[in-house]
Image 1 (cartoon, helix red, strand yellow):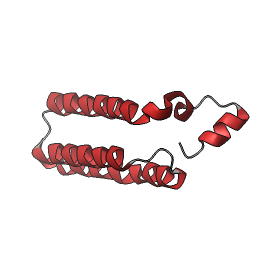
Image 2 (cartoon, one colour):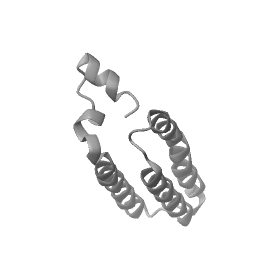
Image 3 (cartoon, helix red, strand yellow):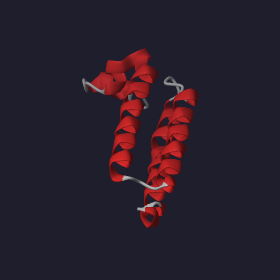
Length: 102
């Protein structure tokens, strides 16, 4: 949403413009499907408990992002977008720490 004014000005069909005020609902759907995919993958792989802890922490971080998101605050949107590297690092750390338990 941080670029939606620019997107509209130059005619880019961005998801920010497409989702509009329903952005949080779409994020819940996409984050939920992503987490479901990880649950299936971890179950299929017989992943150890550190991977599950990492996934739980990822769920908490994504939920926090949705809870605090203000789609009308462009600097906050950018900050939350950039924070996703932390979310990815937490998930990755859980997977790496689970290797000895595989």
